[in-house]
Every structure is written in C-alpha cells, then in structure tokens.
Length: 130
Ligand code: ZN
Image (cartoon, rainbow, N blue to C red):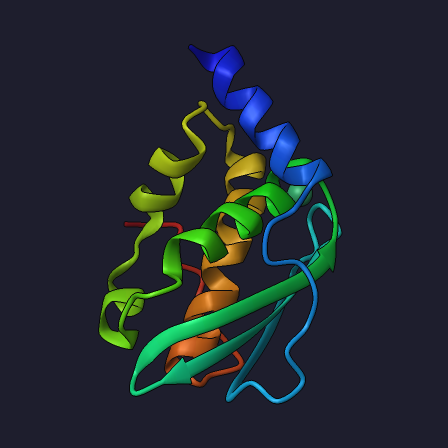
C-alpha cells in the first residue's frame, strides 16, 4: 500500500498541480523549512470567502512539494473557515505514508503556508506538541 502512496507523491512532485503564481490573488503567503531547505509560496484567490483559485511555487524535497500540490487540490472550493480547520492529521492522511520527525516538517510546510495565508499572519507558532 505504501508503494502506491509513494508513487502518487512522486507523481505530484514531478508534475505538480496548481503550480505557478497568481499575482492578483488576494492572499499571498510564504514560509520555509530551514531544516530541509524547503521553500514555498502560495497565492490564494478568495471569492465570496471561497477559495476559487490557488497556485504555489517553491523548491525543496519531494515531500514538501508534493504536499503543496496535493493540498492545493484539496482547498479549491472550500470556504476560508474550512481551510482554517485543516489540521496536521489531514495532511498526514493525505500523504498516506509514515513519516519521521524531520519529514513531517517537510510535509507540514504546505499547511503552515496555507494557515499563514488564511490567518493573514507571517509567523506561525511551532506546534509540534499537540
Ligand atoms: Zn523537505
């Protein structure tokens, strides 16, 4: 079963969905994972409080970039309130493979950037302790 998920992750990494930028979007967010060198930018277009479009760009490992590709697929059509409810477990379920502590930071970078955008903040507290 892991192999299937690994293939999906690799496919998203090599052929990312929603890749690019939306210069006129109303939300621009960005964050980094210095431990791995992952960088992520996200542009989110909100229309009547619903995510109508999203693009991301960045660089880094397969997990961080695939996670962003998959997460951006998930949020289109969601309300801002629903986006705020997305949690760590959602990301882990979405990726579907067991991740060590350092890889989890890679996986969660996309969520961090999304929350930065959703809450309009530039800093997101490290919430490793649940
Ligand atoms: Zn990484």
